[in-house]
Image (cartoon, rainbow, N blue to C red; front, side, top):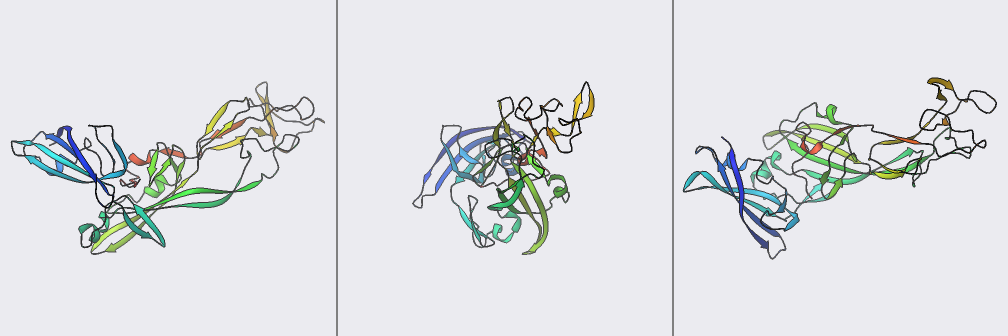
Length: 330
């Protein structure tokens, strides 16, 4: 039992008196068995996914503020293998309270007395956007210039600065989440672009700070309340020692090439000062394992910088084990 083909055959809609935009896309869905039902006809990757934005294949129109809310499927009276499926979109938004913070999402309104109101697992996720303030040691300033003293050496203790990263907290109710999810995904970064509540997180910028699972019981439903905390560190461009620009992806680290040892004729040797005494603090290197000229003797060029991918990447949105909300309000 499966879907053989899906084709969009019509689309229509408009805006009501409350300025809520509603659209309907009509699809002809063909299955391979007369016994296939509505679940087979609507549960196919060939149809638009729930809460995807409106974009008809019959025109060039796109409405990023309207998302798919419902499917309505009806079997063709002349052919039991053919279904007419209507995909209904809306820009209607619902308001919730997250702690003391009001949250507005583009997910369906929870009508009083509805199944979604009674069953916690049918409720849309709650999303909060905030910030995390910290202090960080830095070896490169805000313009990408290495922070060195007048003799072109790194400071013994790196200076620190304030930094605030954007944070996104997602809370959703799940019936049976994988209890190993925090171990697997804490401190990993996104390998593909994410779009959450209007925030675009480019590859490498979003790190899973913490995932927590709390057991809950409500209205005779047992479920788990899963909290995803994502911290965003934006990418930036810097200039390498040879003058070429390169991009630091979010959570990569930028480190100056420096040390107390150098490689000469394939052998590791101590770097020595002008008096022939081994140095005890890190000296700038040239990117090939050799110490740069002693400052003042021949002029020291800019110290090369290395960037390191500190955290393991995952494609969050599609990874079945992470199970980020399929409803990502935009």
